[in-house]
Length: 279
Length: 173
Image (tube, rainbow over all chains, first blue to last red; front, side):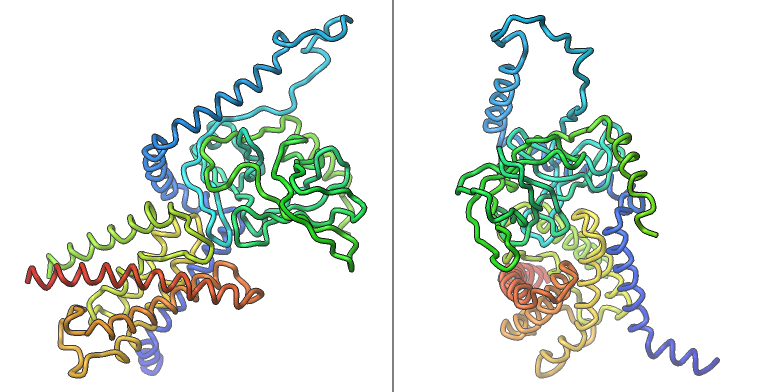
């Protein structure tokens, strides 16, 4: 017992180091496992509201360009109003409420924290469960896709930015069917990578890359970026494209969380179809 | 004693505020990621109790992690760097050694020794931080370059801040 006491005294500093490192790594582990908000809900609310105050102040500096963007978007949406369109063929007018069903709705929010210079970047937005935000919703701006919700608390949501090593989206070239996987491998915020596009696909610099209908995160056809370069991976028979994001990730301010309304139904069905795959 | 605790508490807050609401908002570059907040850990008096300083390092790192949603990477990096603070301090001690209750002052320390001490501390901290952040040795030289380039900027900022801090504290004595 005496020896044990001596041992503790002698190595107390190393023991303390190991305990503190242990706690840190547990926190890192839980952070990667989407539990952080649950563990630190309260503390995060404090951090969140301080961040929000700071961002509110910063926002005044960008009011002009944000207004411009919103006005442009309003104009685009207005152009799509049925009343503002000329009828091209005079059949019976479709009754919108019985033929169409709304599948996506959009929750407006504001970015209160964002980084682009870390190995894994996150976007914090000021909408949460209270506003209807759930995990795995897509985040878009008027210009294009920017991220996916990772964790949600009552008033805030933390999203994986496109600039996150674990981000992996299906994307395709606009007007083409071939799709590939979009990731971030570079160290620059303006260079994403689109892999696995078959070599026979015609690609030009400046082509638009958009979301596909294969996931329930984003609606089909949301722009992501433009092609800024490509090379052929001759061993694999695939093209690797460099993509410049449509919405510069360094200047995001107002965003929408995309709610895919029949998501539960689709995912339940897919899960049922996959049942038995593991065994 | 009491007044110096308040002084260090104020510096703790200043360091965190500068890091969180200024440097982290700048988003300069992937390779220039200064971590100014560890100035607080560099600044602590030489004879801070060895367990207390580890706990302070942990708390400082964790505060950054809370705001950055980064789990515990800053906490881990701070604890690792602070663990080696004692040996580094001893290695660059002034010729006559540290007196009892010594505060770190550039006058006593010499600017060269201060830069060496801070430099090694920053190097260990950044090295731990960036490797834990990417959690692999896959792009080893990439991360190493990031450690060195970011560390250099941190060292520059901290040296400037230290000159200000020490100039003021020795003047008020």
